[in-house]
Image (cartoon, rainbow, N blue to C red):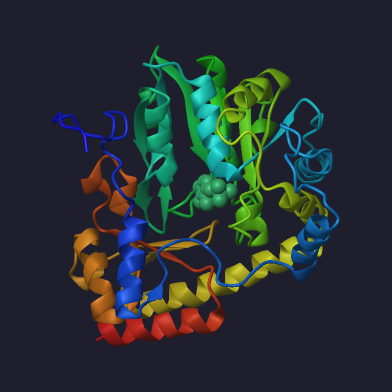
Length: 394
Ligand SMILES: *Cc1c(COP(=O)(O)O)cnc(C)c1O
């Protein structure tokens, strides 16, 4: 220990102690609860993709440092995916960068593009790494709160416009949005694009749930909107789409100058990562449309199963149009403090969930909301729904 009274953790990170996920996962273990807190699947992705990783490893592909920008096979596959899905053409050599998951892509983009004192506008509730990465970059975060309207959380475009100042450097967008399940509409994205062009802002857009959109919702990459291709850093990941969250393979697609800037930061974070898995993900991205359709159908059924269970138990359910999370309002249960509710839930019902307040700067705005993950086996979700019904339904 140091002898001075100075805290060990520096000022930039002081507010980010340990995450709620550690506390809740420990609670889940201690009480034998079903853990619907953290968002990772309880089954692995396609067998042929797992086999592709084994083959790469056995064939000695990727066991040593892969190239800094990522292996050519994966960069080509990412470019082909963006072209096939969205008609977005990218040069695999200059406009694609492979990262250690979307997490590193977010960190590298912010560290590269934000100058100390710059303002970064982002939606709250935030994905949990955004606030910490903005802080590490020395930026100031400016939240725009997504607010509940009937069955979903919506962006107020006037609030977004008002949040932009002369100090704003970039907009950090996430669609489909974790934790609310909101998928931004064409009209909303058009307005965001117009604002970015008018105020000459950079945009970093986290689209890791691009393949998980339900019902009539459609994922539209921000980079496809007028004036956005040259100012947008698009972030994708294999973790959520292929159910291999432990592999940590993500990527950035952007104009050459932006990719070069992000790579400047990335090379001093991990340098490179996930060698053999990069080859496997290249094969995964080339899977036929039927894989992506079946994956979406499966998650849709899980969404409906858990949502119905939560509604029967008495929660108000915000039907997610995307992602594998469902946000609920606990006020119909006579509760209003999501933290207290989630701390008591394992003893009360044998289920673990996350209080959305942890994703807010304005904690009170998120107080009554609680998030459940539905990327779990059907029997696990059915069991959780039954436990919640027993604990709450009258
Ligand atoms: C899971 C998640 C990430 C992190 O993705 P990795 O590829 O596992 O690093 C980033 N953004 C959002 C919104 C997520 O839900």
